[in-house]
Image 1 (cartoon, rainbow, N blue to C red):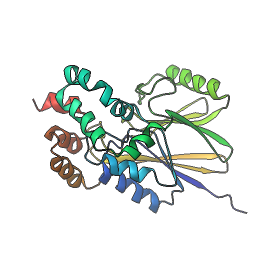
Image 2 (cartoon, rainbow, N blue to C red; image 1 turned 60 degrees about the horizontal axis):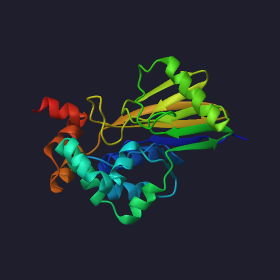
Image 3 (cartoon, one colour; image 1 turned 120 degrees about the vertical axis):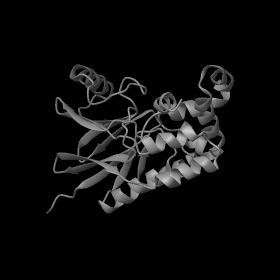
Length: 257
């Protein structure tokens, strides 16, 4: 009897970009994806926070919360402080995201874990936003191997299992790296790439007979729909520039000043 292959879409850093998310989900469906693992950061800068959360609450999604999501949920307590010490556009992004989430979706996000251990086909996988040590640690293609080995050991000592893969995001830099038979997979960013390439990003994990295969995808999507939503919402033009140019806000502000 043939062994069934499990296909999992690995995605995250959607940052309220519904057109980008819908493109990824459509592409993944056509590849026969069985389920979706999301490493968080549903919210921020784009115009569809509530719709993105609603879409990812559906069956077939395993979700964790990202560091940006946590900050949005803190907004009522941090409003005055952030108004003083953050760039006005960053403060507005937090404010707008919080105010445009339904109470039910705020509760949904609040209940999500910061990391999640999953098992498929007899193998173990860990979802984190930044790293097993911090949801704000930036892992990328040049993170030293010694650091990845430390992080693998932290995760495996905590959960007392050996991980086939540790899946992360936060840096918005897609990669797959292997450390001592454990894959570190960064999904890249669905909604706000940071590498100068505006196309949406996600990864596909295929499991069959104990073998893991990872494919990374960059997809064209309707950027005009995303930026039109930003404009309708009255959000800063810099947010549209981020989407068009595939850059973060600091880069956009520094290069458009």
